[in-house]
Length: 217
Image 1: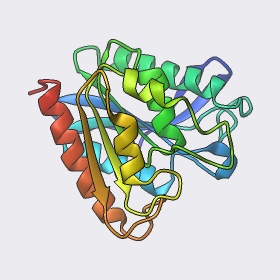
Image 2 (image 1 turned 135 degrees about the vertical axis):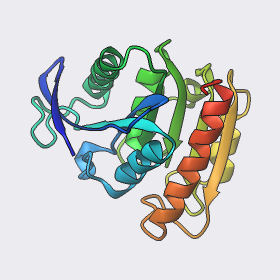
Image 3 (image 1 turned 90 degrees about the vertical axis):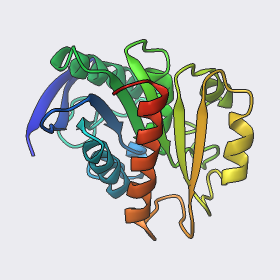
């Protein structure tokens, strides 16, 4: 698994790039909240990267500033958005002929929305464990940001997610500017630890839908 170093606004960004032969797209995968132990090696993040590869895409994971070997310090979600933009730019430069997707888990879903949503090179978003509320206010962003995304966006939510029940997520997505898809993983809580293989299966299905919506052959 090749480790690569990216350059973000705060300096080095530690990353892992997993490439597949004959890829039809490339995807960035964003990890959960650094203040709660989130890294690119998080189990759910790893499963999203596996789903990307299973659907024929290159997968890039990275650590935000201050996580692992990445330079800098936690910046309340603001600097982390800039890190995500830098990682997207690196991936686009490495694979200029491939369409891009942006994926994230929990806090990483909001990084995906805030950095990937406004980026014209990103053709679709995969959001797993979209957190609508948290004890840490830095985690939760304005739900209007999720509705404003014009690209297709697929959400995979745990049935018993304490930070956003599926019905609440469905309500938030109503009135969105772009196509939306919501899938629920039965019997799971926010981290999906009860059934990580099911998370991966639903992520693969969500990616398939995104590729169709974005007309990526």
